[in-house]
Amino acid sequence: MVKMKGVVVPTITPFTADDQIDVDAIYRLVNYLVDNGVDSIYPNGTTGEMLKLSCEERKLVAKASVDAAAGRIPVFVQVGASTTKETLDLAEHALSIGAAGIGVVTPQFFGVNHREMVNYYTTVANALPEDFAVYLYNIPQCAGNDITPEVIEDVLAATKNVVGIKYSWTDFIRFNKYLQCGNGTFDAIVGPDRLFLPGLAIGCAGVVSGCSQCYPAPFVDVYKHFMNGDIKAAQKAQVQATELCEIVKAGANMGYFKAALEYNGLGVMHMRAPALDITAEEKKNLFKALDDYHAKYGK
Image 1 (tube, rainbow, N blue to C red):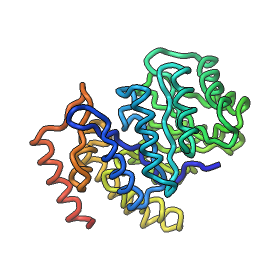
Image 2: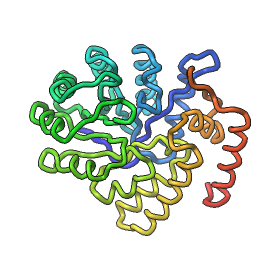
Image 3: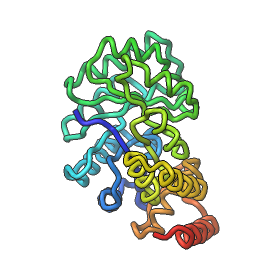
């Protein structure tokens, strides 16, 4: 079973000027990320604007991402949707196209109780092979639902392929509780980019970092130096990564990620309404900030 580790990039979804999925841009992005040393990619997540995509569009993005990666790095497809039926459809599609595993965000908007949350995850996981990695995805500040450690223990008792959780909040007490699930065999993946190194220090396996696609090097360096035991170098790299996060608004507006990728030579990538591309003035200021950043740290 292939598992998440290191720098996992939740890729943006590039749209053309006429609001179509830009498949060519997906290939350019994946090649760029592979060339810059990331460990895996995670399409159709929050960064990928998944709730703005139809089921067929999500399948298109997933397949293009797997095809572009071409076995060079693993692809974990985020398949969580508004209904269990659609989530199952997307999960089975991810398996069929050769994804390494899936992430499954909680149900959104409508509240679910403990029994419903456990049923949701066990239904999805048990529809898939036991050696196909399933990651829970908890982003309570957006989804409106939370995955408790008690939910995880019940899910683990009823499945064999649920191996970890991506947690996109800053509660390190909760991270510690997650890491104790399954008698300490359960992985936790850091969602907040700026907490990558602290997360590694308490035992997390990696980060799912949207900001890292804008410039992967400092994030890759955090993981490399940490794994080599050079904490001072890892701390230095985390400072650089954090500064980049601030420049690209830390995921508050995916338009900044897309503009940063344009800055890096990957072409123009549009947002999907109601979100809008950043303004010309905002892009000018972003490019100046990135110029200053690279003058400070190199490129």
